[in-house]
Image (cartoon, rainbow, N blue to C red; front, side, top):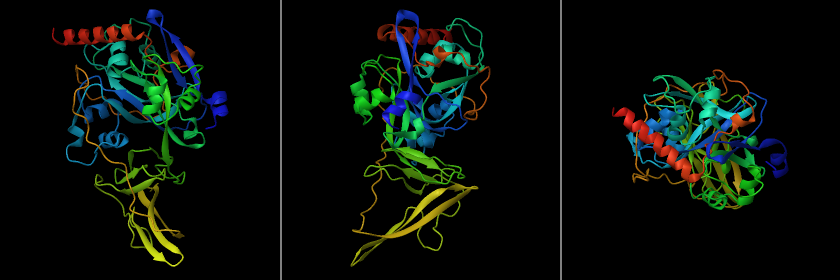
Amino acid sequence: MSRPAAAAAAALLVILAAAGGAAAKTTIEPCSSADSCAALLGYSLYADMKVSEVAALFGADPAALLAANALDFASPGAANRILPAGLLLRVPTRCACADGVRKSVSVRYAARPADTLATVADVVFAGLASADQIRSANGLAEADPDALLDAGQILVVPFPCVCLNSTDNNLPAVYLSYVVRVGDTVQSIAASHATTVTDLSNVNAMGSPVVAPGDILAVPLSACASTFPNFASDYGLLVANGTYALTAGNCVECSCGPGDLNLYCTPASLGTSCSSMQCSSSSLMLGNVTTQPTSGGCGVSSCSYAGLVNGSITTSLSSGLQPTCPGPHQVPPLMEPSTAAIHDSYLAPSPSPGPGEAGGDVPGSSDPGASSHSLAGSLSPSVHQLHQMILILSLVFYLHM
């Protein structure tokens, strides 16, 4: 979106004072409609975890999680691969409108023995939500954040996200909620996400390009936008540049980049029962392109994905004359997940319940005021690290009693 529009109406910077006198900041987007958009959560693994465990924690599909990170999602046993503690993943989510602001409210977490609001917020979900925010979302009474939760207690865990019309500087974009880590600067965050300091500062309404650990920034990622009709089940599909998304019941995989920002979809190997992917009145299948050199240029015909309509895959056949014949389409490379430990692992999570409906009613939800919308932890770097270590050691001690 244009920078004046973003500054005027979209992103608000909220500051929450907390223990230690430090402040954590997050960017929120006011809203009033019931729509939602595709968004990403930046999640740092607190333990060595299987892909399926991370997916269960967020109520996501393991293959979709891998696809969003350009990790090999089609190889046998991909869901059982172990990812190292400290690895930063992009978790796909729906960014809904709840309590007048954009947030993801589809995650349900089942408390385990030794869990507290503080450990769930700071350790399990790595600072993407605060203890106060979880308490407010579930209508819980004020209590010590280090008090033990009842094992099996189901919690709604809200996460910050923004839509901002799914554009950035009038180009398609998907927004990543990124928790600032020790050693991060605005410059390093911008560089690692292929954006600029100016753009990052404008999106987050930052008076100065300064961040602290625990702050949550909305990071714009260039993306490929779909043009499906609004009655398609996957209307509004967005794929971040350099990654993939699965749709149509995992029958179709769509990629973005690296050569351009045009969505490119082909049959996926994961679907077990898929409808026809052949273009009508043509022998071309989804993703196929034919070329025919002529004296006036090159005749090009292609079969493209047009969305999932009434449970069926729809395709679109296009033909035209281009100056030259295009070469083979280049897709983003799929990487193997890292297996090197980034830091010591501690406790692996149990699978959480199935996700609730994004944008649905939240137990005990009410407008808790501006401070409750600041979803970051808020300790200074050294105090924040010490607090997390104490919480983790407490969990380990409890489980070995």
